[in-house]
Image (tube, rainbow, N blue to C red; front, side, top):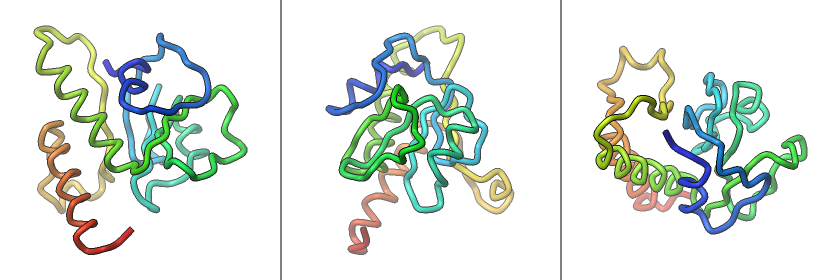
Length: 149
């Protein structure tokens, strides 16, 4: 399972409580998704608000460096800062994939939530973490090529 220590080792700056005992049961880019003990990583304007993510179970978030964290976020709420949330999410996924490939027996795994379930019948999507990381990497490089954000 993904831990606070795993995530904090990927980002140079963090705020809020530093608790090595936090285990993230979910990682989600969708604020409106149920994410018990979740790490919220908003990757687009459609991701939703931090308040919505917290109400759905997020216990930490990855946040864009230089962007103000909403005042309603609790002072102890862990925030990991990154220059680019999409690249930050990719780092988390790659690190977790490396961890999974080194383990022989895993009783519990972190669940990654990225898609609106209503779209699953319309698109050929996968929940394989290696494929998802590759798709996110491709998405980020295509956005950069287009000169957007």
